[in-house]
Amino acid sequence: MNYMSLCKSTAKGIQCLDFDESGRFLLALGGNRLTIHDVDNEVMIASTLTHATETLDVRFTTAANTLVEVGRNLVRLWFIKGSDMRFEEVDMSTMQNPTTFYTCVGWIDNDLIVGASTGDVIRFAGVTPNSKIKAHTSKITNISSVAGGTFAISAANSVKLYDSKCRCIIAVDTEVLGVRHQISSLSWHSDTRKILIGTEGNEVWELSSEDGSNINDGPIVSAHASSPMAISAHPNGTTFATVADDGFLRVWNDEHISLDLAMPSRACAYSPDGRMLAVGFGKPVKDTAKTINGKWVIIDVSGRSYCIIAERRDSRKFIREMKWYSNGDRLAVGSDKIYVYQL
Image (cartoon, rainbow, N blue to C red):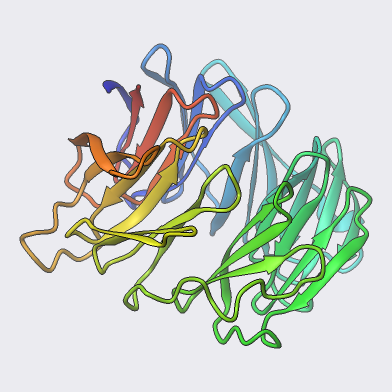
């Protein structure tokens, strides 16, 4: 594991990380500062203040050197040329009754879609908002897109699945299924026809995308202590991992493996091939000497032994986010700074 590069420190820690399609460039959002890092050459190529009241999501688009940022009172497209970054506000007034609160970003093939606080999902044609659908009656919290143009979206207590023509295929009222807490995360797997939802009550439910039914008798995860929980889905679509402040890594499949890591964790991520799992340690308020904020490990999960094959600590702040590049040879780790590693 070779340490590659470091992005500039941010005042409030890393909120969002995203690699571009080449894996060379990494964006990071921390507080109201947006940075772009050239991982290959180990340099930060651009950095700017967003001057936004509140940014909720920012991603690379499929177009070269272009980002999309959404948040309170804004949808922006950022254009990168050398070290210069400039943005253009997207005119959302073309949509009837435009909202002022845009929450998350997704894709229908190469078309951008944006979720809104009104429950609308807005589809773009290029850089122009083109149409919208009333997906939910409350704020869109997550969008999970897959190849082929289908996408799943969630609100507080409901999930819907749409095809590439924005036709609703499945609508699920999660309260009817017995889900008592609001949805906080969403993962849609088209190959296995399963939808995973995580809740604010540290539960994970597995739903069928065929008919919206609960595949199990209840939640398949309700074992962590009451604290923020991180979840990562395995590429096979049938396994996922969870971590939380109770210090346990739990892998949910036919065997339901539990591994005591002895430290709280708020971040985990499967490698693209599913053979490794990265786990980052710490929490905002350190309450025991056993907690080592900033430490992270890579666990070999290809067999039954689940052994740690790499570990590092380059920060003294808790790990907030971990993101693999799609080829699996690079890992970005976010705390108060961004560290990029070459495997």
